[in-house]
Amino acid sequence: MSQAETDVDVVARLTAVHERIAAAAAKHDRDPATIHLVAISKTKPAAMVERALGTGQRDFGENYLQDALAKIEALAKAEPAPRWHFVGDIQSNKTRDIAAHFDWTHAIDRFKIARRLSEQRPAALAPINACIQVNIDDETSKSGVAPDAVEALADRIAELDNVRLRGLMTIPAHTEDFAAQRRPFAALREIRERLNAAGHALDTLSMGMSADLEAAIAEGATHIRIGTAIFGARGQ
Ligand SMILES: *Cc1c(COP(=O)(O)O)cnc(C)c1O
Image (cartoon, rainbow, N blue to C red; front, side, top):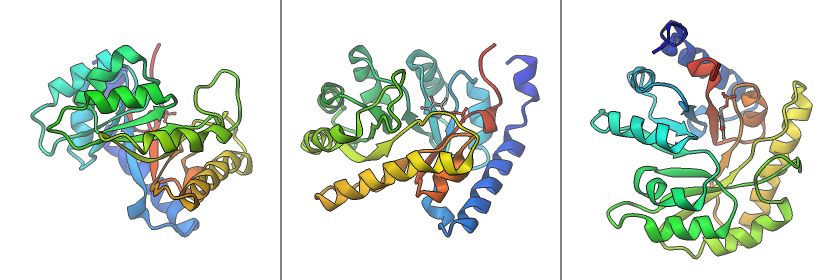
């Protein structure tokens, strides 16, 4: 670990994130037990994940497959076992490893990827949990399905044996304004309501990151994906 990384107090930062979650839940009339914290450990060493595990944190999100597989291997015997979420885009050549090693995928945006995950899911494992990534504010640079294409994709994924469609995920454009942060999250919630009215049973809204988790909680987030606020800045 670099000096900067060892200086990050994961335990204190996790406590502070739990305080933010509790405060937002109280303010917006949410039961905090319905808000799951996925700690995004991408690029961070297994030792930092281990420290978070020691506090009872179970869910961890990764974005880069090779980096993730090394950590999953390093923590294979950890008790209790971490639950691994793949939150990045998935290329076809990555589906076999993701199907074998992850409990969740958050960024499905093509049927082909979902079908491969279903076909390649090892028989000994429960179906992999999946969210469709929605391109909620139509940014040209972002991945995800257009809002009006979500239902058709959901209908097809729901037919797969070894993928369990749980809900929707989004990464909106960055803004500091709270009302503006809430708008795309409200739009995602409405798409889920529409799909459920059409016969789906989606229980998951994967939305909210370090900078906008309060707005996501206000709009019904069930899974918030928090990296920087727990593990410190990445890269450099
Ligand atoms: C990196 C990442 C996060 C975490 O973002 P932070 O701003 O560090 O909290 C959440 N979701 C996805 C899909 C990511 O790639």
